[in-house]
Length: 143
Figure 1 (tube, one colour):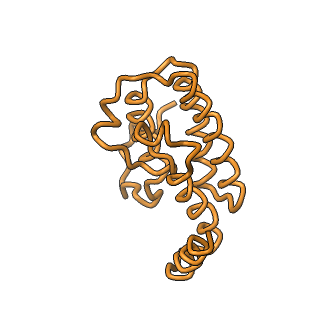
Figure 2 (cartoon, one colour):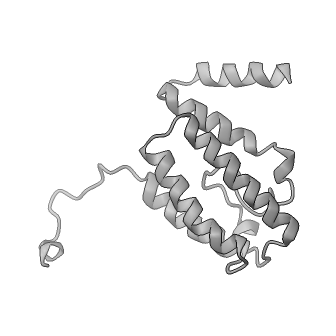
């Protein structure tokens, strides 16, 4: 355990992110190795990033009871991580995750469908807001 703590401190001091982003990132990163989530680790990106493999995107399985319980634990664990250093992006991602993961949990969507939707939401929430065209088309303004 001591080694892991050393790695975490190296990780957070070696990068120049905003310091508060680190706590949440490091916490989410740690979920990937959490044994509680081993049943769902091959089905979705545990750390809340958009790292779904092609297999994950094509996954047509739905969570069974044991996986549902792992998903419920994951929701709690992610909430704790986000609470360590909430910011606009981490909160936005978490709310998107919560709203989407319910359908997965309830068996209304497959892991693949969840991963595709997450992929889209993640892109929308994390894309820099500075990418606004200089001359927006005028038809956007008609109400």
